[in-house]
Length: 79
Length: 222
Image (cartoon, rainbow over all chains, first blue to last red; front, side, top):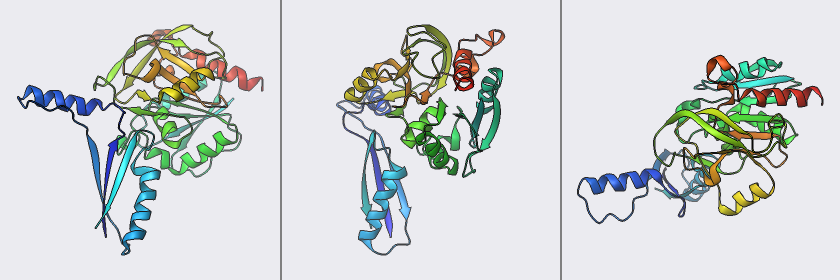
């Protein structure tokens, strides 16, 4: 199976890199960008064939390593 | 005092940190990150600055899962002393031994210069050689030193007198100008500035030496 993990800064945590991208877009003439938040996408190839089991394992991976849950939130897609 | 300095791939302040301990009179052992246990009888573990594992994923995240990190957590949980400087501070927050997280500097730039600090508390083995509110000058060199904690937690840290150092002129956007923070039992310290780079007046000042000498004094009297 494949898993795709999205890691984003939690709402309320200021994202300095997203802000910089927003400013840069403004400088390029793209008007009306009122917010940019930047995150990560992590793709995993798994030997597991059961979707529920895969989701449970990847969730553990997120809690332990892939996300820092102090400041980041994550979502898991299994396909 | 017996000190152990952890070496990760990408650590680059390990020798400076060993020098800091040694100059204060400590016996120093260097410890490779693949060790699964620590040598017996260590009083303090130092986690040095640098770019462990190339800062991949998040600064300190991979190092925090290294075999030796489990041993460090065990040492700390048993009441042992640990100091993490710069990348070492990031490792300590990633292991959960210290609260909060270190994010990209608010100005997005790598900041490499001397900064003014105020000692927040002299009530710890690391800071007992300083007086509260004493001002120090130490170098910083980091891209991700923006200390993030919730307002409630910051208040809790303040109430418990756990903020060891504050910036006089915040270089990175840290909540509450926090530059260094202590664990609940006051035996684990994480800080972004580099005391080990300021231990000799011939090399840009010696305001950092007090940290190592106070630690040694506390251990020798223990």
